[in-house]
Length: 207
Image (cartoon, rainbow, N blue to C red; front, side, top):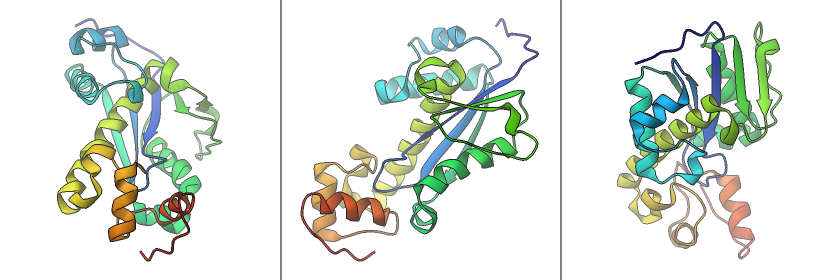
């Protein structure tokens, strides 16, 4: 395999699950040792925004990343921490935790967040739509989605009533109906659920 001898190590970062009603926020970071084309050739599929790929294609790309020995890091912030500190805090904190433990010459985060990490702030950039335009960020988004979906499928085994294996924690109609019937679990984001359901009908839920 023709690996690139890069003097500049770009680390792409993205998250999955920011708008979900249940489950953790998951973020990943990826540094490529080769071109994204080689990853796509191994996966036999085109890499693009993970939300536009079906689960099978996301997994194929993740497997290809492992084959080329891409550097991959995963960070998780629980629903409980999101309830305690808010999603805004979680969205910044999760990227800070990743950047603190990674050595790279440039960090590119999807979105428009202002992230400061001592000694590294000067090499951190937030780019809107980076998950559709920058290879390392595209791949980080795909990995984050695979990791988040894996967690939700596992939690579904404990709480099958909420159909997390299908909705991955998002506020689908099935999820809403289950919440109104069974209320929340430890893994629900209380503010998300309450505000989401109040748009349908005034409710009072206990977590």
